[in-house]
Length: 215
Image 1 (tube, rainbow, N blue to C red):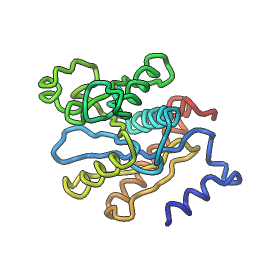
Image 2: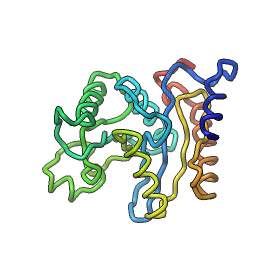
Image 3: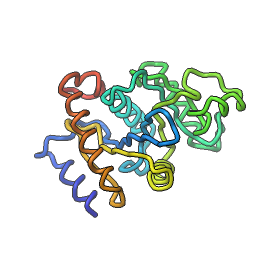
Image 4: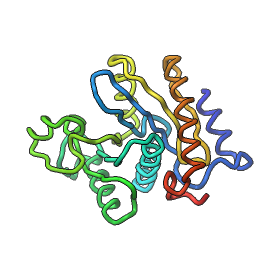
């Protein structure tokens, strides 16, 4: 597969692209039926991340949001319920990530957990579910519980809701464009444009975009 070849080259020491941090995938999505842009992570690349890798995924995504000039990153760590359930791993991971944010291990964003996707972006859904948080109904950064969920949400939005999308792999010293084989031509163009914006942000303020990486 092209992505395997591409990433294999990226991880070679002579490429000097990796930093020791987890690489992760971010998708910028503009759906015609929703007024705000959102970022979804991780849509690809990370098959079974542990909690430390999920922390890096969150931090990488915060930097991506900031590079796109989306003010006040608000992270909804997604699950299918709004309560911690010990038999549901996604809710446990979400709770840990929120606590890590409280303790300064994730910086630059408000983090809430766990949140159902509807309550994350819709005021009425949040009200019906009696959720009162600084993130519910106004999340602009969605962290999927696993690669399957993230990839399916991304593709359904792109191919059924005709959302405009742009995708990058972040966490390296430069942005890496990695789109789906089935992505439309405009998604590839948008991804190239977003890569330019992200690279400019890295050059302008690397420490803010990648606070967990030494320049």
